[in-house]
Amino acid sequence: MSNFQISILGVFLFFIVLGVILFAGFGNNTSTTIGTVNIWGTVDKNIMENLLAELRREDDSFTGVKYKEVNSEIFDEELAEALASGKGPDVFMLSQYSILKHQDKIFPIPYESYLMRDFKDKFIEEGELYLKENGILSLPFIVDPLVMYWNRDIFSRKGISVPPTSWDEFFDLSQNITEKDDNLNILTSLVPFGEFRNINNAKEIISTLIMQAGSPITERSGDDINIALTRKKTQSSIMPAEEAINFFTQFSNPVNSVYTWNRSLVSSEKLFLTGDLAIYFGFASELEGLRAKNPNLNFDVAPIPQTNNDNNATFGRMWGLSIARNSKNIGGSFNAIKGLTGDVMLRKLSELNNLPPVSRNLLVKRPESPYLDVFYRSAIFSKAWLDPRPEETSLIFQDMIESIISGRERTVNAINRASSEMKVLVDDLEN
Image (cartoon, rainbow, N blue to C red):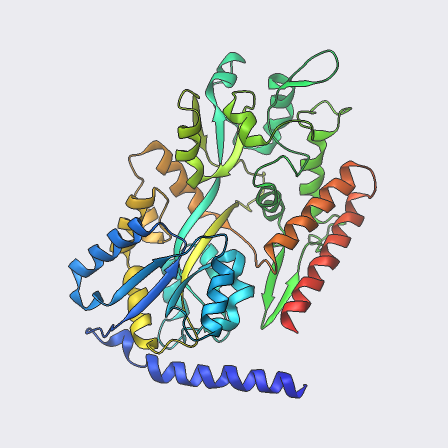
């Protein structure tokens, strides 16, 4: 072990010991000490102010908890600069995309203060991305699952009454719904599959297919992050990622009977809004935006279709509440985020942002809203993966898909190369 690694290990051990001291007894103490706690996040300020007002009505000891909204496009940069200068928040919202990027800035909650069993019983499975051997990096706060928006008029014109629930249905659906002219120009498309540049949420869609096929994409092993893209199934010669990507890319092959998408089309969101795309895969949070952009579009929402195995999954964007490592109010910050992630507050948050709660208990009761009902069901099997550098992995995924559909590489070779490139990104973070 190098001197540098020994030094880093020493720092982490120090904070673990300090954390146990500062958190000791909080779990069994009915009184709370909060003080001043500054929270930074990307959630709309009005939503958070309403939530905090509700929290203060329940317990006036939360009076000192304040919130600052930061533009999502500059959040990571502004957070890093503020924490480095000692002017950062006590608590910040941690996206699952940024776990690896910011984990060194976080004070992990010791399991002596928040039992792992209690964490797993309370939060949906995707929240376990925040678990490390030395503690909890973040308490889950928001989940935004990928769902399937479908055009009811297109389905009705073709005599189809319900949306697909299985990917196997897409073969017949593509031939039934997709319309082309004599030059094979696509007039009406079933689904935006097989490309990358003009498909909204392309990386998340591909990730969903890969996770459904049985690969976690990345996984923790102690303090190490392993790339699992090339892992094969037990007693199988094929990789789950290969199955998923072969399925995805066939829909952009002009000689294939399921051909329904190409790079010349406008973005999948735009085509859906014009009424020429039958299915659009977007996040739950996109619902109001789609309605606003075309109030006359007759669409509905359904869960993401699944494979015929038991790996139900849809990609979920998640945000948790993390305690900054250099906060001067560790104990108060802990009590603040415990208060904000209680079921009463999570139910209120769901009412404010029209997204499903991250609490298992709250997902048991189905909501009256037909849209929110789908979001609730999708949250239960929402998943994601530890992304070393989201912008760069998007380029890696794009190049992987485009090298396959252009014929430059076979699927297996493209996946192997993508895996190697992702490993370089992980190694850069760890060194």
